[in-house]
Image (cartoon, rainbow, N blue to C red; front, side, top):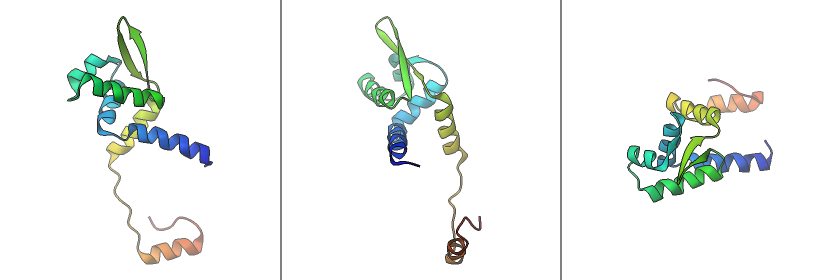
Length: 114
């Protein structure tokens, strides 16, 4: 992976890595919602939700369409967001390795012992 790709991906992950933003994208995966709709679902103020949506929009995770005086938001990268949330929900256990397994892996130059 090149450095620019790692920076881009890190920024995207940082944008999602907040409890309120995770809740927002999870709700938006269910369908397009205006800020007032999101405010009815989440325990956050309208200004706070708008700030979080700006972070998500700047990261290219959500976008919006104008509906009169309201902006209605949707997930602009639904496959990516769904995959991230699915992986988090899967609850993969933490991998543990003994010193011997690590030494064997080093010697073989690849993955070992799962």
